[in-house]
Length: 156
Image 1 (cartoon, rainbow, N blue to C red):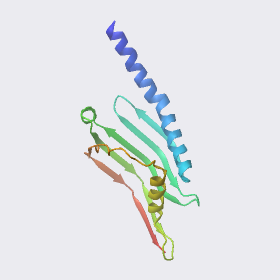
Image 2 (image 1 turned 180 degrees about the vertical axis):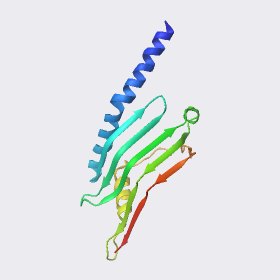
Image 3 (image 1 turned 30 degrees about the vertical axis):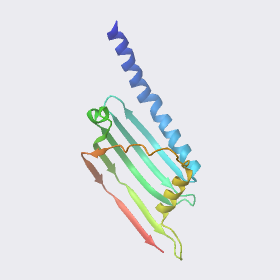
Image 4 (image 1 turned 90 degrees about the horizontal axis):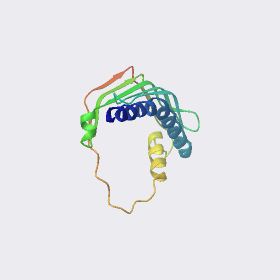
């Protein structure tokens, strides 16, 4: 009997991870970006819950003016079960294919870098915290692979 219950739970975990999670993740990210005044577009998300793998296709982060801050053809992250059990975010494999980043600052005194504007906007959305700071999560990355990266740098 317990084997049947375990099989049902495993099937539900898989079904939620494969069907519901990608749509939910995409909607949450796109909704949050709208609150910030930016646009995040994701072509597709593929989740493999038992393998702890998430693959993203066609990711774009755009400013309101339409300038692309970040683009990614394909991103893949594979986590380690053993690290998650101990409370650590252990990344076994992180692969980025054709990432592109724009670092830009307009001419003139007091102008800010585009990424600093984004960070300030995100920080302004956070509620003020009166509680003690939570313990930092330990993060480790075993393998990082970047293929075909492009960086645009414009200063004034």
